[in-house]
Length: 333
Ligand SMILES: [Zn+2]
Image (tube, helix red, strand yellow):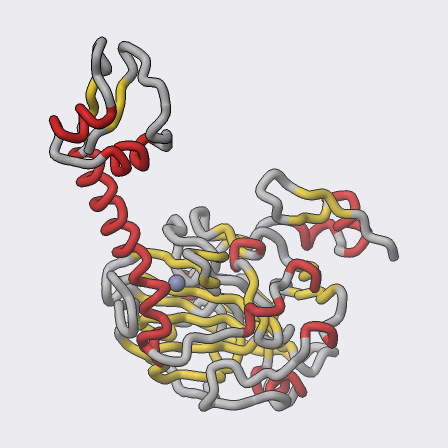
């Protein structure tokens, strides 16, 4: 099916709703609220369904819901191929070998979503000082619970260079979510987790200038902007299914920081930025101007302000032969 697209002002390509509906049923295009597992009543009975992966659970408050049987789900191939609990990004998939469109089914009656941490993104995905920032940063106090965004299997749960304490979850649709800089990891590689389960506590481990969650979404190792899926500020999944288009993925986004120093360049940029601002402020404060009066010459100004003609020319982008106008402001320092 030919799928037309429109380009939003931000340059981020999005399907029009009309075309999305041709591909994805309408109910799946509604935002999905974040789940709070603590609000669930205790399960009182379980009924099998025609789908071996799903059982019907009746709860004490009279509600019922479909629940996945993780043992059945875990036997699926997605949890076997390219499975490595020691390497952050174990995939070696070429960009050209990715499908043009990858439909990610994110939530349905048996698959829920939980916002890992609801907050305003303070540092987004994309190039930052010439380096790719592979996720989003969400500030929070150390010790804040971090929740699994979707059901999945813990693929990596260990310290890793600039990520600090890192958890990587793999989900049934092939998506992987990364949770970095944690103060505490509360799961182990191989564990099954449900959406909304607390997997760790927030912190500032690794190369980080303050407590924040570094959250990534990757497909076969290729990172993309998690905000395409999640509205972090409102804590909702934008829609139940998402069509990830290959051309929106950056072939260089498979990179993972190897060492703490490696990541440092990403996180020090905030400091470098501040240092740069301070340097510019000092420079502005030190600037001195002279208003040209009749009889002023460049060599006369150089003597008066203890500088040289060439230095004044450089500061003002003029040549030594330039004519000075009366009333003109010339920078001398
Ligand atoms: Zn980050």
